[in-house]
Image (cartoon, rainbow, N blue to C red; front, side, top):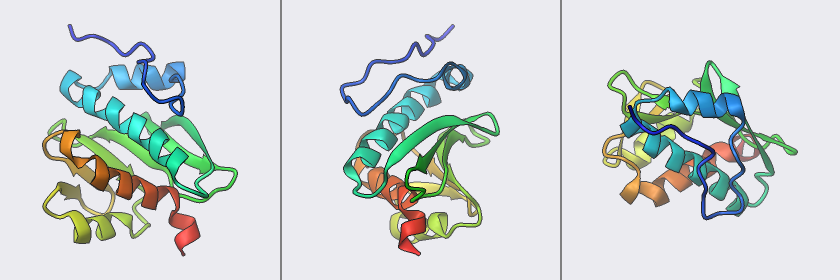
Length: 146
């Protein structure tokens, strides 16, 4: 049996402990994807802290997936974390935004995409932090960009 998430300690003070229901959702992911999704969670909080105007991030569950949304101000759209049909880690945005289309235009070589809602990590998170941080920042500021 794979190790479970237990409010994994992070090096950044900007990353809060997980709410219990979110921890349960992370524990349900396949082990390989879970490691990348936890790293992606950390990157969301760190990017929010570094993005002027992003404001406070709330961590909750939407459709059973860990979800991150901006409040005070509501500058961005919700980011959800999950897996695709092949259990690869994925970042999902609201399907009525233009974000995934924009990411596909800019990062077709770095990621795979699922229709107009998902950015799929092909080979984990290690070498993609800059591209992922950019994508996360764009999602966190989506409503301010319009």
